[in-house]
Picture 1 (cartoon, rainbow, N blue to C red):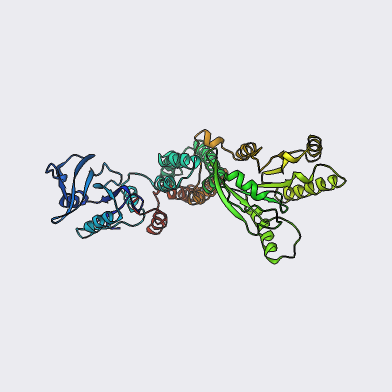
Picture 2 (spheres, rainbow, N blue to C red):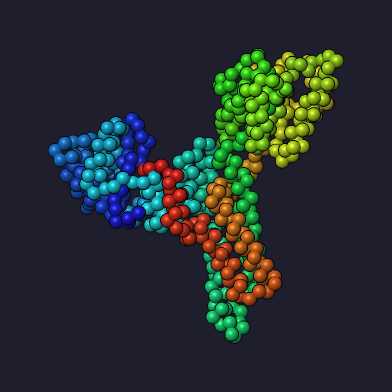
Length: 468
C-alpha cells in the first residue's frame, strides 16, 4: 500500500437503495472531491472545517451526475487518520458507478478489501485486534456476536494484552540491563516481584485461552444434532424450532435422507440445528449414506437431541422393550460423547396417557415431553439449550476470545511465559531468561499489531468487505 495514494470505494451495500455512500480517503481526498463538487453556496471544500456537511452536485465537466451531500473529515481526526470525504448520493447503481469512475479518472484508485481500516491501523487509530473486531461487528448476526465484537472494538481485549505487555516489558528492560553488567553479577529485576508478575500473566492468559471454547461456538453458532429413528418427528421438531416449514414432513419412513441445517437465535445466541436421517437398519443405499452422515453430524455437534415417538409408548406388552431400546440408545450416545450436553425428548406427548408419562419418567428419568406438531414444550427446550451455553462471561462483559489467530498467539505466549517461570524456579541466568521473555512479548505483540508483517496484514484485511 502506497501511503501517498488516495483511495475510493462504495461504503454501503451494492445494489439499488434510497441512498449510497462513497468513501474517499487519502492525502488528496478533499482536494479531489472539491474539484468535482459544485456547492450550492459556492463553498471550497478545502477551506471548510472538519466534520462538516455540504450540499451540492457532483459534476463531470458540464454534466451533473447527482445532487449529493459531502461530509469532510480532516486527518488525523477521521476514521482512517487521513483526509476523508464521504459522498451521500442517490442509491442508483448507475449513479454509484458513474461517481466512482469519475474519481478514478481524477487521481484516485479503487480501494482494496479492508483498506480503509488498514489505513486506520497504520495511522494508529486502532490496534490490530480492534481492526479485526470491525469485521466481526459487520458480520454479527445476533446479540451475543454483536456484544463481543463491540467489547473488542472498544479495546477491552487490547487493554488486557497491553497491560500484560507493558508490565513484562519493564522487567525485560531490567533483565537486559543486567546483561550489560554481567561481569559485576548484579540484579536489577527483583526476582520476587518478577515471579509474582509471571504468575499473574499466566492466570490472565489461561482465562483468555479458556474463554475461546465459549467464544468460538458463540461466533460460529452452536451446532445441535437432532437424531432418532425414522418418523419420530425430527423434521417436525426442526420446523417448530425454526417456526417455518424448512424440512419435508411425511408419514413415509426414510423421507429425510440427508442432513438439513438452519440457524436461529435464542436469547441472543445462535444455534444451528441439524435434522438428520432416521437411524434404522435399511437396504436402501441412499438412505444408508444419510444414516452414516447422521453419525458424522453427532461427532461435529456441540449438543445432541435424541427424539423418541411417544405415540408408541402408551401401553402394551412391548412398552418395557421400547423404553429399554430408547434407554440403550441414549446411553450409547452419552458414553461415546460424555462431554456433549444431551437432551432426551419424547415427542407426540399429546397422544400419551398420564399413567404412561409417569411410567416413562420413572424409567427414563430425565426425559422431556413435547409435541412438535402443536408446539407444546418447545419454549422449555429452547430455555434448556440456553442453559448449556456458559454465558456468565458474556453477562459480566468479560473479555471473550473468538479469533483463532488470537487464540494461537495466546497459546504460544503461555508456553513462553511458563518457560520464564521455570527459569526463575531453576535460577537460570539473565541471558537465558531474556530469550523466553522476548518470545512472550513477541506473541503478545502479534495480537495487537506491535509485531506484524505484510503477509499477516494481507491475510487479515482480505476478509473485510471493500469500502470498510
